[in-house]
Image 1 (tube, rainbow over the protein chains, first blue to last red):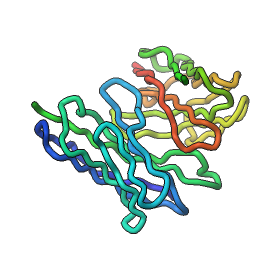
Image 2: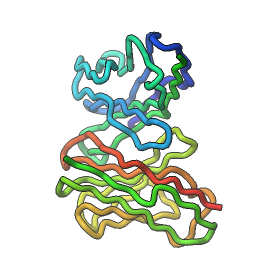
Image 3: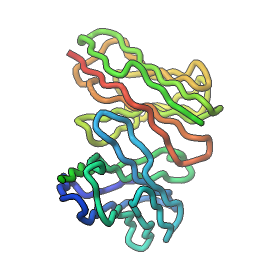
Length: 115
Length: 112
């Protein structure tokens, strides 16, 4: 079946530091890949996505590249801010069959950014 | 633009009491709808999804049920709550045929 493994965390950084949160996946076929962010007490927000190999998703300074050869979709940001403190979820959506349209989530990575 | 609403925002219920959580979507037609549960602020578990009125698929056998009485309304219910039903319940929608899901603000349920 499909699965997503992401960096366990928690991750603690100082403001303006470089961020990497690792995400690898297992899936049949050609999944779409997503990063979602969850701020305290809120629902999940779609941060970025990539639908095919070598696609780069980007939003709000965050980037992730769909690497089919390494089955990875690592999240990066060059300079984090305190306001980026949240839980980050990597997810995949497999096409076709009984998995159509369903998202498989990683366990989430807590990011805390200090001033 | 599309919006998704969930209510109530928080709920404290005793063990053995019934449950009804509601989710509605505005600004779109015939969405796919999903119920997730999030325990301990981390991983999400898909509970139910629906591709149309009256069409419900259950992902995990449990104490809960779901219904979709109208195109843009999705209800999560239980006849008798268990302590293990506590958690953060999230509703989501997607455009039919699309992989992107959009989440509501969630309902925090505490069973005492």
